Image (cartoon, rainbow, N blue to C red; front, side, top):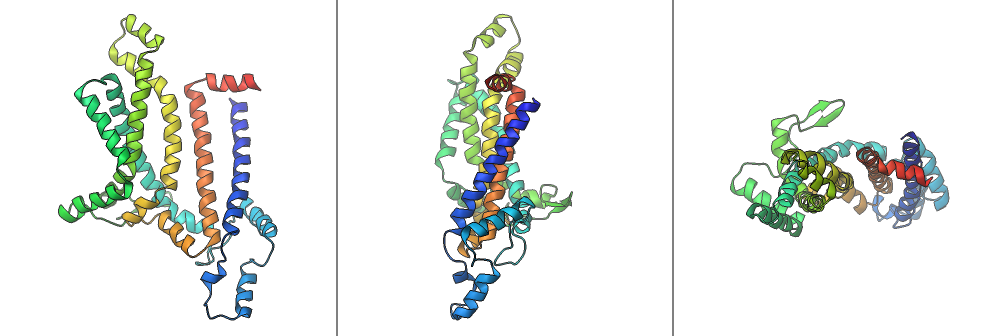
Length: 326
């Protein structure tokens, strides 16, 4: 297990290094932020001073080496617009995005797996068919449209829920969280539900497919032939085995929820990283864009690492196969 973990750590480090290069080159090779940051009426001397002050006069490879040196110590540069460390700016907004993503994934997991299991165990029943029809609907509806419908229904017509903002927060371990206040949940419910809808549909379909496949396996038929209770057959022999691919998908989808929560955050004016990223792109605030992309890339790498460990724990054949291959 230790060898498996160390190998995954080395691979993760290599991926992050490649991502740093790709992100830096792709962002820094496009556009000139000086055009956005200074007065269009400024003369050439002022433009040159601003360029030198931001370090944009140096060759691209020199800028990258300087960036890489700082990244090792956690310094991803300073925001051109706000004048504060880009990483600090991203992390100050990331808590709200992570909180929204966690609640959305919990909704998807707590509803998606049981519903998918029911649909897989009773595929020809009215309930099973209704669940699958609902999952198809969840796949088909655009996120922005669902968000607007939720606002029109629960905020405008019924007046039950607020349409924007984050609500009251409390500080827990240095993080400002809204899940520990009633007002926070009132503000959190609609954007979390909107963000969870697609993932919920995905987990329903995946769980159903895995359940149908597991029911055809010999170990399930043997368990039934031994006279085990249906609850034990489902809970031990079916559910545990179908969780291997589901855990993988949940991990990857959580990263995508964090990365692509921009639409939901924009619709509900959720104060996360989405609006900050959009503003930074419009203003060509390169350090913030790079910091955001690297934080998201790091998040994906960490999630994949945790998923690999969970995968090997659920199915020891994975790490045994890796060891045999090396």
